[in-house]
Length: 272
Image (cartoon, helix red, strand yellow):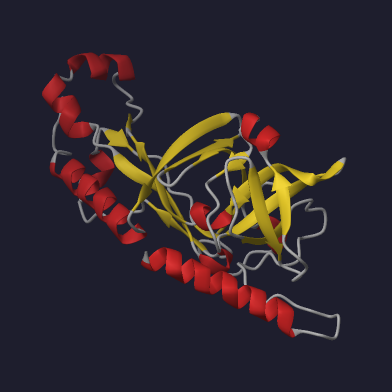
């Protein structure tokens, strides 16, 4: 009830703000930063209003114009409604250029925010003396259970389009370089945005020496939305679909990753 009341207050405040200006140059003060779409972005941004359903979304534009109702039946059939817009949620809408009353795609940006992770299993390191197949054949099931400890990797999408990565751990184990297994590197993200319905994750703006990178050198990973619900997310990147589950927060997710790393480090002295 408290969350719903807050959303109602947010929506009421947005309507009041939009209605206060009488000079014809109204500006939205709510939202998540995408009040004005970037050049080339065909989506529009605003708030979900009362009346949203499985067949329609009621949309309050960020430019403070009147609410608009868009038919989303075809979008839902095409699996292009991501999330479940609730009153006051910040959403992105792609309007059908051939039908101004139909939305081809809807994204609940507030539902997209949060901490999302997936499990990563380590792989065997290259060995100069034995092949990976030979090493695997020599490992007992109990050894495999000790070595192949999963970690949680992922990211947190925050307000104002800030982001952070999940999964990085710092190990003090002096035998780390002797471990039989290795985990993929964690990509460091610092920002995110939505552009034409795709999630773009922005990498670290500093290099390894902590010097500012030229803008053209900053990493950008473009993810295609496949599915979004309250606790599940699926993204396609370079043709590969990855399923994520929502974590309580980044601290909890990183705690799980650190515990997995600690468990793995305790067993790194296993030798064959």
